[in-house]
Image (cartoon, rainbow, N blue to C red):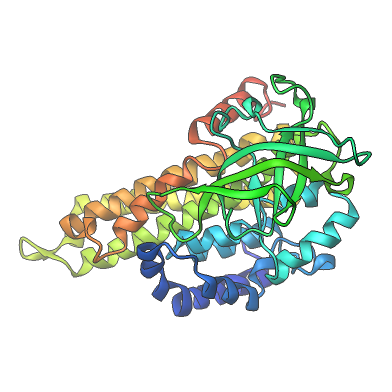
Length: 391
């Protein structure tokens, strides 16, 4: 068993680390304060080839896979979860296309993501259908004017990157709106330019500012048959896409936690209390040590999950391992950012230090793409169904 990264992945880590220190870190605070989309960072990622990490080479990417993307996101998230989210959005909406899309769809939509010429977003959640995905009310009915086409109406919410996206992966009911059967939901590629597509309200967020989150309004949008992803009645595709994303979200948590711990550790080494550096106190050392152990545990869980996802292991029997990474790493981000605020004391609560930003950003990670409670339920089901450990 080899725990060393492949040379190309280690080189990727080092190059992203340098890029983050030189270009992203100086912008992080300003992005958070203004909430403005950091187009300069997006272009930086595009020119550095980071937008195509998870895209196969035949479609213009580098083929580094989910593990490569996770490693890059981990480094970026040390200073900016907003910038890390920009990288995540190269995989979340493209995942269903890569998993079940046609060759034509892949050639039409993936190269633009890899080059940065186009952006995409993912439309699954609705006001009354977050964790309860089957409660969605967005409907798709057969288009009477175009055989095989569909007409979609409804509202999607909490979509990251909704205002910047050129196209959307959208899930809608192709069966009865009240149906909770999995074969009643299908996936579609909806282009921003289609008539009837518009952006509704944009959310005012506690953290992760700079990439807009908001509503996508679909008013009798005509979608051609070639924009159906996979088969009609393919709700399973939504779950496969989300399952494969667990380590990517986990990487955001690891990066945030590590950035917060490193910053707080440097601070307590230089802060005096009772005539000694705060880092000399055993109670402080123990808290730092516990967090360091959790970080390494989260990293191992996440790298394994990313490797599994790259092998195509994101079906039911592998879900507990993927969910473990997302649950553990994102909850760690909350604990580590809280510890960083505490170690800095009153200073940690002030905008003079990035700790308060990390503290606000961390909570989002335990909610998006499956809450911590959803992950615990999936892990428990794996144990109860004997998908884990049993011969």
